[in-house]
Length: 337
View 1: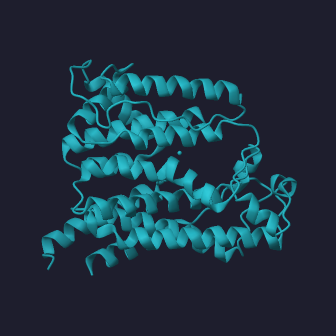
View 2 (view 1 turned 120 degrees about the vertical axis):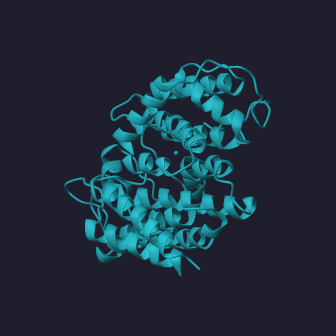
């Protein structure tokens, strides 16, 4: 039974979350396969460079610029947990920015990713390159976070560092979605003290994959402008859809069928993530449910459009502030019942 004070506190937190959403905060998406080097699965503890207010301030600025809703969420966590979560965010964000530069030469991007892998190997060994890396080292020393999700994310980013990015099958797309988004959940879980780690890991991966699939559907037009098509090639070919038409933002009945198929899979993954929200303590279930409802809003909008996510203006699919507010209210209601 929830007391009145707790209900009022949850409403207060929800209103702050909704305010950030309405002001433009968004839940982010994060993303040659190299073998994992033969290093310890968990980092060893050793003295590293000082992690002080300089790195903390730089990470805060990074979050404020790109993901203000995450900056708010971090303030609701215990101080040490917030610091560690922010360090993980900074590492993922800076990696994402390497692959998200319009017009970048793929060879230069791959070189930067090789350098990023080297930097990660160094910090894993306790030798960070800069203050933000030092913050991550401190995070890794305080929490039993495995090495694999970091390396998997780098592999996913490497697959984007090519001209004319294409994905062969739905299985390949889901693997990519795990690499660039599902991995984030695996990094965060040790910080959140999940009740059942095995179930929590499954739910975190489902949520990350769903978010990435929906981001791909949402961003089809801007991705086409970069020469990228993430919809599975086998599904497009089965519907007799030509890549040239997709890049030219020409929709068709067959194309919309493929969008619907991927949308249905994303819906299934959101459902699985929702069912696993109770594995998290504290406000974890609420924030998971808010994310689930927000991303269901994108799927609802796609359905309303008849699954046509290509626009001549090259814009991404959007949902209005009223839908975002409703998503937060629905999330609160589901978590409290």
